[in-house]
Amino acid sequence: MTETDDTTYTTYDLHEQIGHLLRRAYQRHTSLFQTVIPDDHLTSVQFAVLATVFREKEGSLIHIGRITAIDHATLRGICSRLKQRGLINIRGNPDDRRERLLSLSEKGMEMVRTYLPQAARVSELTLEPLDACERIAALHVLRKLAE
Image (cartoon, rainbow, N blue to C red):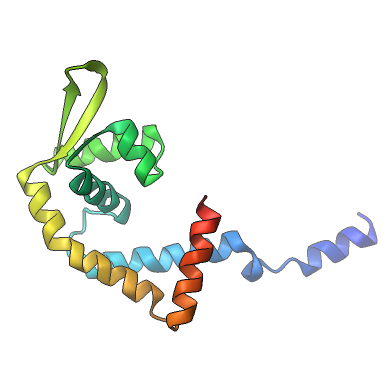
């Protein structure tokens, strides 16, 4: 190892790394979600799927995956669990038998309607340490990074 390599390694501060900070912020958000939403079996990612299907009324697995930015294999597992809980319906598309269509069950609709205000509160609590300008800036930067 050269002297330059030593300097590089000693100046690396984990607490200044974007990946670490994003993960910590996400952990905080997840903890707030679990505290605010009174369902021990519902994750924030599962709720994102439910809320998206609620907004779309019905959508293909591929379409919902694109909107939520969840890969196909992970989304299939999430949808399987949501279906087992009776929250979503999954049916084949009569026009394309390879395609699976998602919609909310009545129980799923009721859950989303109940939890939407609480989920919005989770976002408020996540951003609570920031002032109004910082909130706008944080969301702007995160949108850019997510592109």
